[in-house]
Image 1 (cartoon, rainbow, N blue to C red):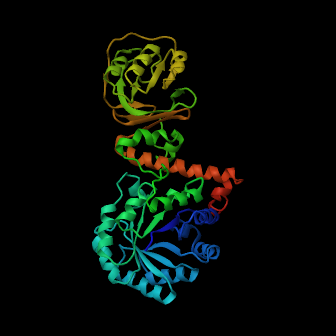
Image 2: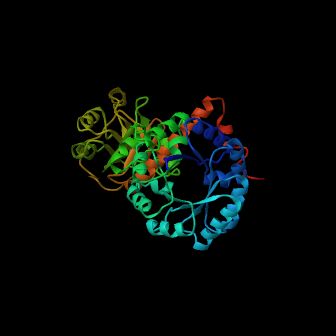
Image 3: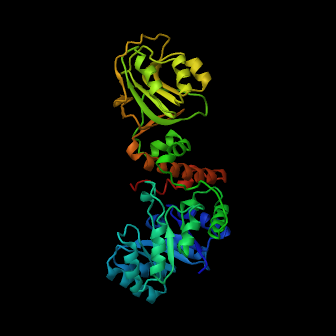
Length: 430
Protein backbone atom coordinates (compact mmCIF):
# COMPACT_ATOMS: atom_id res chain seq x y z
CA UNK A 1 0.00 0.00 0.00
CA UNK A 2 1.11 3.60 -0.59
CA UNK A 3 2.50 4.94 2.70
CA UNK A 4 -0.19 6.64 4.75
CA UNK A 5 0.42 9.67 6.98
CA UNK A 6 -1.42 9.36 10.30
CA UNK A 7 -1.59 12.49 12.45
CA UNK A 8 -1.51 11.72 16.19
CA UNK A 9 -3.50 14.27 18.18
CA UNK A 10 -1.66 13.83 21.47
CA UNK A 11 -3.24 16.81 23.20
CA UNK A 12 -5.38 17.46 26.27
CA UNK A 13 -7.77 19.97 24.70
CA UNK A 14 -10.38 18.83 22.17
CA UNK A 15 -10.85 22.28 20.60
CA UNK A 16 -7.13 22.55 19.88
CA UNK A 17 -7.13 19.01 18.49
CA UNK A 18 -9.93 19.79 16.04
CA UNK A 19 -8.17 22.91 14.77
CA UNK A 20 -4.85 21.13 14.35
CA UNK A 21 -6.53 18.16 12.68
CA UNK A 22 -8.14 20.42 10.06
CA UNK A 23 -4.79 22.06 9.35
CA UNK A 24 -3.08 18.66 9.03
CA UNK A 25 -5.74 17.32 6.68
CA UNK A 26 -5.40 20.46 4.55
CA UNK A 27 -1.72 19.59 4.35
CA UNK A 28 -2.52 16.08 3.15
CA UNK A 29 -2.67 13.93 6.29
CA UNK A 30 -4.59 10.74 5.50
CA UNK A 31 -5.64 9.21 8.82
CA UNK A 32 -6.54 10.94 12.08
CA UNK A 33 -5.59 9.50 15.45
CA UNK A 34 -7.43 10.46 18.61
CA UNK A 35 -4.35 10.30 20.81
CA UNK A 36 -4.22 8.57 24.18
CA UNK A 37 -3.96 11.85 26.15
CA UNK A 38 -7.00 13.21 24.30
CA UNK A 39 -9.07 10.10 25.01
CA UNK A 40 -8.07 10.19 28.67
CA UNK A 41 -8.89 13.89 28.82
CA UNK A 42 -12.13 14.01 26.83
CA UNK A 43 -13.25 10.38 26.67
CA UNK A 44 -15.28 8.88 23.85
CA UNK A 45 -16.65 12.34 23.10
CA UNK A 46 -13.32 13.17 21.44
CA UNK A 47 -13.86 10.29 19.02
CA UNK A 48 -17.48 11.33 18.35
CA UNK A 49 -16.46 14.95 17.72
CA UNK A 50 -13.65 14.09 15.33
CA UNK A 51 -15.90 11.63 13.50
CA UNK A 52 -18.43 14.43 12.93
CA UNK A 53 -15.65 16.77 11.81
CA UNK A 54 -14.08 14.26 9.41
CA UNK A 55 -16.78 11.88 8.15
CA UNK A 56 -14.69 10.56 5.28
CA UNK A 57 -11.39 10.02 7.07
CA UNK A 58 -10.08 6.88 8.75
CA UNK A 59 -10.23 7.53 12.49
CA UNK A 60 -7.99 5.72 14.96
CA UNK A 61 -8.76 5.56 18.69
CA UNK A 62 -5.42 5.12 20.44
CA UNK A 63 -6.79 3.52 23.59
CA UNK A 64 -3.70 1.34 24.16
CA UNK A 65 -6.05 -1.24 25.65
CA UNK A 66 -4.48 -3.67 28.11
CA UNK A 67 -7.59 -5.46 29.41
CA UNK A 68 -11.30 -5.91 28.60
CA UNK A 69 -10.50 -5.61 24.90
CA UNK A 70 -14.01 -6.44 23.77
CA UNK A 71 -15.68 -3.68 25.77
CA UNK A 72 -13.19 -0.93 24.91
CA UNK A 73 -13.34 -1.74 21.20
CA UNK A 74 -17.13 -1.69 21.32
CA UNK A 75 -17.09 1.73 23.00
CA UNK A 76 -14.70 3.26 20.50
CA UNK A 77 -16.35 1.66 17.47
CA UNK A 78 -19.78 2.94 18.50
CA UNK A 79 -18.25 6.40 18.98
CA UNK A 80 -17.01 6.31 15.39
CA UNK A 81 -13.51 4.81 15.41
CA UNK A 82 -12.41 2.74 12.41
CA UNK A 83 -9.31 1.41 14.18
CA UNK A 84 -8.68 0.76 17.89
CA UNK A 85 -5.26 0.11 19.42
CA UNK A 86 -4.47 -2.71 21.84
CA UNK A 87 -1.12 -3.21 23.55
CA UNK A 88 1.06 -6.08 22.42
CA UNK A 89 1.80 -6.69 26.11
CA UNK A 90 -1.86 -7.60 26.65
CA UNK A 91 -2.90 -11.19 27.13
CA UNK A 92 -3.80 -13.16 23.99
CA UNK A 93 -7.37 -13.42 25.20
CA UNK A 94 -7.64 -9.63 25.42
CA UNK A 95 -6.44 -9.24 21.85
CA UNK A 96 -8.72 -12.04 20.62
CA UNK A 97 -11.71 -10.40 22.32
CA UNK A 98 -10.78 -7.09 20.76
CA UNK A 99 -10.67 -8.68 17.30
CA UNK A 100 -14.04 -10.36 17.80
CA UNK A 101 -15.64 -7.16 19.06
CA UNK A 102 -14.12 -5.24 16.16
CA UNK A 103 -15.65 -7.64 13.65
CA UNK A 104 -19.00 -7.27 15.36
CA UNK A 105 -18.98 -3.47 15.45
CA UNK A 106 -16.93 -2.66 12.34
CA UNK A 107 -13.52 -1.72 13.70
CA UNK A 108 -10.03 -2.97 12.89
CA UNK A 109 -7.40 -3.70 15.55
CA UNK A 110 -3.90 -2.25 15.60
CA UNK A 111 -1.49 -3.81 18.08
CA UNK A 112 1.00 -1.39 19.64
CA UNK A 113 4.39 -3.01 20.35
CA UNK A 114 5.58 -0.41 22.87
CA UNK A 115 7.91 -2.06 25.44
CA UNK A 116 7.35 -5.58 24.07
CA UNK A 117 10.63 -7.49 24.67
CA UNK A 118 10.63 -9.49 21.39
CA UNK A 119 8.64 -7.40 18.96
CA UNK A 120 9.24 -9.61 15.93
CA UNK A 121 8.04 -12.75 17.69
CA UNK A 122 5.03 -10.97 19.18
CA UNK A 123 4.08 -9.46 15.82
CA UNK A 124 3.89 -12.91 14.26
CA UNK A 125 1.80 -14.20 17.16
CA UNK A 126 -0.79 -11.39 17.15
CA UNK A 127 -1.17 -11.61 13.37
CA UNK A 128 -2.47 -15.14 13.92
CA UNK A 129 -5.05 -13.71 16.33
CA UNK A 130 -6.59 -11.74 13.46
CA UNK A 131 -5.38 -8.18 14.03
CA UNK A 132 -5.24 -5.81 11.06
CA UNK A 133 -2.12 -3.76 11.80
CA UNK A 134 1.13 -3.91 13.76
CA UNK A 135 2.55 -0.68 15.19
CA UNK A 136 6.23 -0.44 16.07
CA UNK A 137 6.15 2.34 18.63
CA UNK A 138 9.04 3.99 20.47
CA UNK A 139 7.50 5.80 23.45
CA UNK A 140 8.15 9.45 24.24
CA UNK A 141 10.01 8.72 27.47
CA UNK A 142 12.33 6.40 25.56
CA UNK A 143 12.83 9.00 22.83
CA UNK A 144 13.94 11.55 25.41
CA UNK A 145 16.89 9.35 26.32
CA UNK A 146 18.22 9.80 22.80
CA UNK A 147 17.81 6.19 21.64
CA UNK A 148 18.06 5.64 17.90
CA UNK A 149 15.16 4.82 15.60
CA UNK A 150 14.43 1.03 15.58
CA UNK A 151 14.48 0.77 11.78
CA UNK A 152 16.16 -2.65 11.74
CA UNK A 153 13.43 -4.14 13.94
CA UNK A 154 10.76 -2.59 11.73
CA UNK A 155 12.36 -4.21 8.68
CA UNK A 156 12.32 -7.63 10.35
CA UNK A 157 8.67 -7.27 11.37
CA UNK A 158 7.66 -6.21 7.86
CA UNK A 159 9.40 -9.28 6.47
CA UNK A 160 7.72 -11.65 8.92
CA UNK A 161 4.07 -10.51 8.72
CA UNK A 162 1.66 -10.03 5.83
CA UNK A 163 -0.42 -7.25 7.38
CA UNK A 164 0.47 -3.52 7.20
CA UNK A 165 3.07 -2.25 9.68
CA UNK A 166 2.94 1.22 11.20
CA UNK A 167 5.84 3.18 12.70
CA UNK A 168 5.43 5.70 15.50
CA UNK A 169 7.54 7.59 17.97
CA UNK A 170 9.55 10.75 17.32
CA UNK A 171 9.39 10.48 13.54
CA UNK A 172 10.68 13.56 11.69
CA UNK A 173 11.06 14.45 8.02
CA UNK A 174 14.67 13.26 8.32
CA UNK A 175 13.81 9.81 9.71
CA UNK A 176 10.53 9.09 7.88
CA UNK A 177 12.19 7.92 4.62
CA UNK A 178 14.15 5.22 6.47
CA UNK A 179 10.94 3.85 8.00
CA UNK A 180 9.20 3.79 4.61
CA UNK A 181 12.19 2.07 3.01
CA UNK A 182 12.20 -0.51 5.82
CA UNK A 183 8.59 -1.44 5.07
CA UNK A 184 6.31 0.88 7.06
CA UNK A 185 2.94 1.31 5.39
CA UNK A 186 1.71 3.84 7.95
CA UNK A 187 3.82 6.71 9.29
CA UNK A 188 2.37 8.02 12.55
CA UNK A 189 3.49 11.54 13.47
CA UNK A 190 2.54 13.53 16.54
CA UNK A 191 4.96 16.20 17.75
CA UNK A 192 6.67 16.46 14.37
CA UNK A 193 3.47 18.08 13.08
CA UNK A 194 1.22 19.19 15.94
CA UNK A 195 3.93 21.34 17.57
CA UNK A 196 4.51 23.31 14.37
CA UNK A 197 3.36 26.89 14.01
CA UNK A 198 2.31 25.96 10.45
CA UNK A 199 0.76 22.51 10.80
CA UNK A 200 -0.43 22.44 7.19
CA UNK A 201 3.07 22.99 5.83
CA UNK A 202 4.56 20.47 8.26
CA UNK A 203 2.13 17.81 7.02
CA UNK A 204 3.07 18.64 3.44
CA UNK A 205 6.76 18.39 4.30
CA UNK A 206 6.23 15.02 5.94
CA UNK A 207 4.44 13.64 2.89
CA UNK A 208 7.20 14.95 0.63
CA UNK A 209 9.75 13.25 2.84
CA UNK A 210 7.81 9.98 2.77
CA UNK A 211 7.83 10.09 -1.04
CA UNK A 212 11.60 10.37 -1.11
CA UNK A 213 12.11 14.11 -1.42
CA UNK A 214 14.77 15.69 0.76
CA UNK A 215 13.21 17.92 3.42
CA UNK A 216 14.98 19.46 6.39
CA UNK A 217 13.64 20.65 9.73
CA UNK A 218 14.73 20.51 13.35
CA UNK A 219 11.18 20.15 14.74
CA UNK A 220 10.95 17.18 17.14
CA UNK A 221 14.59 16.25 16.56
CA UNK A 222 16.08 14.20 19.40
CA UNK A 223 19.63 14.99 20.47
CA UNK A 224 22.40 12.64 21.54
CA UNK A 225 25.38 13.13 23.84
CA UNK A 226 27.49 14.76 21.14
CA UNK A 227 24.77 17.34 20.35
CA UNK A 228 23.98 18.63 23.82
CA UNK A 229 25.53 22.05 23.31
CA UNK A 230 23.19 22.62 20.37
CA UNK A 231 20.17 21.27 22.28
CA UNK A 232 20.70 23.36 25.42
CA UNK A 233 21.40 26.44 23.27
CA UNK A 234 17.92 26.22 21.70
CA UNK A 235 15.99 26.96 24.89
CA UNK A 236 16.03 29.18 27.95
CA UNK A 237 16.83 28.30 31.55
CA UNK A 238 13.08 28.66 32.13
CA UNK A 239 12.45 25.77 29.72
CA UNK A 240 15.17 23.72 31.38
CA UNK A 241 13.71 24.34 34.83
CA UNK A 242 10.30 23.15 33.59
CA UNK A 243 11.82 20.08 31.94
CA UNK A 244 13.87 19.25 35.05
CA UNK A 245 10.90 19.77 37.40
CA UNK A 246 12.54 22.79 39.08
CA UNK A 247 15.65 20.83 40.03
CA UNK A 248 19.12 22.18 39.30
CA UNK A 249 18.34 25.88 39.83
CA UNK A 250 21.38 27.71 41.24
CA UNK A 251 19.98 30.34 43.60
CA UNK A 252 21.34 33.70 44.66
CA UNK A 253 23.84 34.43 41.88
CA UNK A 254 23.37 37.48 39.66
CA UNK A 255 23.75 37.33 35.88
CA UNK A 256 26.27 39.76 34.44
CA UNK A 257 25.56 38.93 30.84
CA UNK A 258 24.92 40.90 27.66
CA UNK A 259 21.35 40.99 26.35
CA UNK A 260 20.53 37.93 24.28
CA UNK A 261 23.69 36.04 25.27
CA UNK A 262 23.42 32.51 26.66
CA UNK A 263 26.07 30.48 28.41
CA UNK A 264 26.15 26.74 27.72
CA UNK A 265 29.05 24.47 28.62
CA UNK A 266 30.49 21.77 30.83
CA UNK A 267 31.66 22.65 34.32
CA UNK A 268 35.29 22.74 35.39
CA UNK A 269 35.05 23.13 39.16
CA UNK A 270 37.33 25.14 41.44
CA UNK A 271 37.44 25.55 45.20
CA UNK A 272 39.27 28.46 46.76
CA UNK A 273 39.35 30.82 49.74
CA UNK A 274 38.33 34.45 50.21
CA UNK A 275 40.24 36.61 47.72
CA UNK A 276 42.58 33.80 46.64
CA UNK A 277 42.49 33.91 42.85
CA UNK A 278 45.33 31.44 42.19
CA UNK A 279 43.25 28.29 41.54
CA UNK A 280 40.55 30.09 39.52
CA UNK A 281 43.22 31.48 37.18
CA UNK A 282 45.15 28.19 37.04
CA UNK A 283 41.90 26.46 36.02
CA UNK A 284 41.87 28.52 32.82
CA UNK A 285 45.01 26.68 31.69
CA UNK A 286 43.39 23.31 32.37
CA UNK A 287 40.07 24.14 30.73
CA UNK A 288 38.94 22.70 27.43
CA UNK A 289 37.14 24.81 24.82
CA UNK A 290 33.47 25.00 25.77
CA UNK A 291 34.05 24.72 29.53
CA UNK A 292 32.47 26.94 32.17
CA UNK A 293 34.69 27.61 35.18
CA UNK A 294 32.62 27.14 38.35
CA UNK A 295 34.22 28.59 41.51
CA UNK A 296 33.18 27.85 45.08
CA UNK A 297 34.37 30.62 47.40
CA UNK A 298 31.73 30.02 50.05
CA UNK A 299 30.11 33.41 49.42
CA UNK A 300 33.28 35.19 50.56
CA UNK A 301 33.29 38.99 49.99
CA UNK A 302 36.62 39.58 48.18
CA UNK A 303 36.87 39.11 44.41
CA UNK A 304 38.60 36.07 42.90
CA UNK A 305 37.97 36.95 39.25
CA UNK A 306 38.22 40.01 37.03
CA UNK A 307 38.79 41.36 33.52
CA UNK A 308 42.27 39.89 32.99
CA UNK A 309 41.07 36.43 33.99
CA UNK A 310 38.13 36.81 31.62
CA UNK A 311 40.43 37.78 28.75
CA UNK A 312 42.57 34.73 29.47
CA UNK A 313 39.47 32.53 29.57
CA UNK A 314 38.27 33.79 26.19
CA UNK A 315 41.69 33.02 24.70
CA UNK A 316 41.41 29.40 25.91
CA UNK A 317 37.84 28.95 24.65
CA UNK A 318 36.18 29.08 28.07
CA UNK A 319 32.56 30.17 27.58
CA UNK A 320 31.73 31.60 31.00
CA UNK A 321 32.40 31.78 34.72
CA UNK A 322 30.20 31.09 37.75
CA UNK A 323 31.32 32.31 41.17
CA UNK A 324 29.68 31.64 44.52
CA UNK A 325 31.45 34.73 45.78
CA UNK A 326 32.62 38.07 44.42
CA UNK A 327 33.76 39.33 41.02
CA UNK A 328 35.20 42.66 39.87
CA UNK A 329 35.82 44.62 36.62
CA UNK A 330 32.28 43.78 35.63
CA UNK A 331 32.00 46.80 33.31
CA UNK A 332 34.90 45.54 31.18
CA UNK A 333 33.65 41.96 31.32
CA UNK A 334 30.25 43.01 30.00
CA UNK A 335 31.88 44.86 27.11
CA UNK A 336 33.60 41.59 26.19
CA UNK A 337 30.22 39.81 26.21
CA UNK A 338 31.82 37.16 28.39
CA UNK A 339 29.06 35.53 30.49
CA UNK A 340 29.64 35.87 34.23
CA UNK A 341 27.52 34.96 37.24
CA UNK A 342 28.48 35.92 40.79
CA UNK A 343 26.96 36.57 44.17
CA UNK A 344 28.39 40.08 44.48
CA UNK A 345 30.53 42.74 42.77
CA UNK A 346 33.35 44.52 44.60
CA UNK A 347 36.42 46.51 43.53
CA UNK A 348 38.85 44.67 45.79
CA UNK A 349 40.72 41.43 45.05
CA UNK A 350 42.97 39.37 47.25
CA UNK A 351 46.28 37.64 46.61
CA UNK A 352 47.15 34.41 44.73
CA UNK A 353 47.98 32.08 47.61
CA UNK A 354 47.03 28.76 46.00
CA UNK A 355 44.61 27.28 48.54
CA UNK A 356 41.87 24.90 47.41
CA UNK A 357 41.90 22.76 44.29
CA UNK A 358 40.56 22.10 40.80
CA UNK A 359 38.13 19.39 39.66
CA UNK A 360 36.52 18.39 42.95
CA UNK A 361 32.81 18.40 43.79
CA UNK A 362 31.63 21.83 44.92
CA UNK A 363 28.41 23.45 46.12
CA UNK A 364 27.21 26.54 44.27
CA UNK A 365 24.02 28.36 45.18
CA UNK A 366 22.70 25.31 47.01
CA UNK A 367 23.43 22.88 44.13
CA UNK A 368 26.11 20.21 43.88
CA UNK A 369 28.28 20.71 40.80
CA UNK A 370 30.89 18.27 39.46
CA UNK A 371 33.34 18.67 36.65
CA UNK A 372 31.58 17.54 33.48
CA UNK A 373 28.08 18.58 34.55
CA UNK A 374 26.27 20.96 32.21
CA UNK A 375 25.97 24.62 33.19
CA UNK A 376 23.42 26.82 31.42
CA UNK A 377 22.93 30.50 32.15
CA UNK A 378 21.03 33.44 30.69
CA UNK A 379 19.33 36.62 31.85
CA UNK A 380 16.73 34.53 33.73
CA UNK A 381 19.23 32.68 35.88
CA UNK A 382 21.51 29.70 36.16
CA UNK A 383 21.06 25.91 35.96
CA UNK A 384 23.17 22.83 36.52
CA UNK A 385 22.20 19.55 34.85
CA UNK A 386 24.09 16.42 36.00
CA UNK A 387 25.92 14.77 33.14
CA UNK A 388 24.15 11.42 33.71
CA UNK A 389 20.72 12.84 32.84
CA UNK A 390 21.77 15.60 30.44
CA UNK A 391 20.53 13.89 27.25
CA UNK A 392 17.05 13.30 28.64
CA UNK A 393 16.76 16.76 30.20
CA UNK A 394 17.97 18.42 26.98
CA UNK A 395 15.43 16.58 24.83
CA UNK A 396 12.60 17.33 27.23
CA UNK A 397 13.72 20.98 27.27
CA UNK A 398 13.57 21.26 23.48
CA UNK A 399 10.15 19.57 23.48
CA UNK A 400 8.80 22.12 25.97
CA UNK A 401 10.23 24.97 23.90
CA UNK A 402 8.58 23.63 20.74
CA UNK A 403 5.21 23.17 22.45
CA UNK A 404 5.43 26.75 23.73
CA UNK A 405 6.05 27.91 20.17
CA UNK A 406 2.77 26.30 19.08
CA UNK A 407 0.97 27.95 21.99
CA UNK A 408 2.55 31.27 21.00
CA UNK A 409 1.20 30.83 17.47
CA UNK A 410 -2.33 30.21 18.77
CA UNK A 411 -2.11 33.33 20.93
CA UNK A 412 -1.03 35.33 17.87
CA UNK A 413 -4.20 34.13 16.14
CA UNK A 414 -6.31 35.76 18.84
CA UNK A 415 -6.45 33.28 21.71
CA UNK A 416 -5.00 33.71 25.20
CA UNK A 417 -2.82 31.51 27.38
CA UNK A 418 -5.79 30.67 29.59
CA UNK A 419 -8.01 29.77 26.65
CA UNK A 420 -5.39 27.67 24.89
CA UNK A 421 -4.87 25.58 28.02
CA UNK A 422 -8.53 25.66 29.11
CA UNK A 423 -7.39 26.54 32.62
CA UNK A 424 -10.85 27.03 34.08
CA UNK A 425 -11.88 23.56 32.92
CA UNK A 426 -8.85 21.94 34.52
CA UNK A 427 -8.97 23.69 37.90
CA UNK A 428 -9.48 21.26 40.80
CA UNK A 429 -13.07 20.36 41.44
CA UNK A 430 -14.19 22.06 44.65
